[in-house]
Length: 302
Length: 282
Ligand SMILES: Nc1ncnc2c1ncn2[C@@H]1O[C@H](COP(=O)(O)OP(=O)(O)OP(=O)(O)O)[C@@H](O)[C@H]1O
Ligand SMILES: [Mg+2]
Image (cartoon, rainbow over all chains, first blue to last red; front, side, top):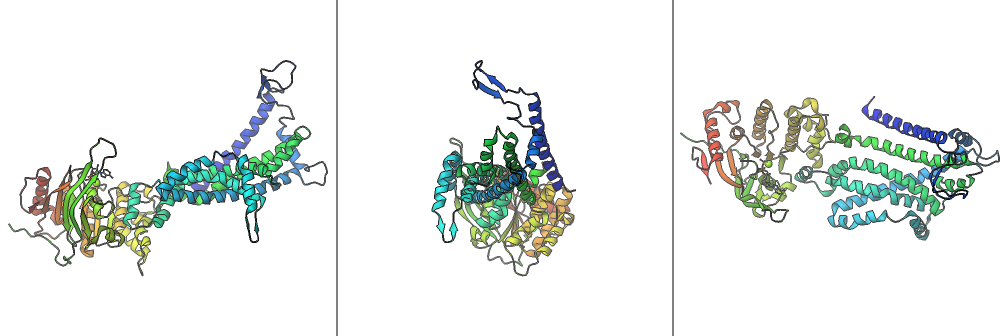
């Protein structure tokens, strides 16, 4: 077995072990934690007073994992003809997955273009980098309606702005940041000797970019992509809610939250779906990174 | 005794390979209060076509800096540099020279053959079989079994040999080499020295060669330029006598003239007072 596939196998194994650990913690806390939770400063006989420091462990707040699994096999609503819950979750998660990947792709392109521009022109770097950092302080909730209304104004021939596009744009808005910052560092990473070698070969800007700077940026790009993937998922889930896009996992979490007392296991189904969505995106990013390993020799060897 | 200066007459001497004229290079101190470094002060030097010239001098005397002026990787503050009668910049853009740096400077994601192929890929020549040329170069530097290895799998000396092969890739008429054999063992070093002389003989390339080794400079060169530090200037130019054994043959190493050359360069290095045979004062 090659070192490459071995390391991939290893990271998948640790990923699965992580999920298993989460399950053990859940059931462990449920078995050992206080049933009514722990409140500090509660006034005797007054419900809901004080500060909750440990959550309740009863079946409404924390259903057993097995109950959740069983619930997944049952139909979404009480009518038996409905699709099973797991299928509904998978469908919602795939819609969100598509949007998140779309956002990640846009973020990759935008982040790369910004990084190249910043590397190329010093003034652009000092002007744009603070803006890039500032951009991440704008709360998503404020952004969603803006993107939506701007998008609605776009009409080019047959093309009409769709709601899901707003979600993808917001996901991209979160995803481009780590890529722009990581890529910029990577593009600036070649040593003076390497740059002089290219100069001595009469290499132009483009040729130096392609033959030296981009390959040298790969070790910085791969971890940035992982971060960006996680950001894209979070952005998609949150933006689905604030933009009001039905059919995705974000909306499903909100809708099912209403069943917290009547059907507690159902609430956790889309949350599990969101977790799996994050894992799938992380896995896809890792897979996409495999062909780039050639450019990470020095990093992987150490 | 007679001094026979082996100036290569077969070559066109109308255009010199390199002509450095009154070059001064001052690195301004980044910190306030620190003194500027005068790396080169009014340095003049001519390298004829096909001539082998070594630069020797204590560390920090500006040898690399001088080489970088010729390569147009750094520009002088005063004076001028011309290469084959053109500006240094034009010569760089025309790829008139090949350069091997003090550090190997290989791209870690390229294999040995891909690294050597880089100059050939960047400036494609019609009808050139790149793969065959690369194989030839790899054999030349004795790395036949390592063509598909990556630089991190090679020793420092092997990396340096890859860099030398890369500098030779396009058969340049001028070779700029900054301590290229510094990391090699004595055996490989002597073999590479002979190979280098053979290549120069075949291609008629001029060489500007930086070294810390007096015997190496004497063995390889037509002229040895002795430099002194702070400010970096040319202290003396020692012309080697080339009587008896032909240039580059191993017999030269045992030749009496060889030892006289070594002595002359050593004296020039230690103090400027040596006025022995074949020493041309400046
Ligand atoms: N980019 C630079 N910025 C500032 N000072 C420099 C720079 N490059 C070289 N110098 C200075 O110029 C002087 C000459 O440096 P150079 O590298 O040419 O020496 P050298 O003769 O090649 O030494 P060595 O034999 O150790 O390689 C040194 O004092 C060095 O500190
Ligand atoms: Mg040097």
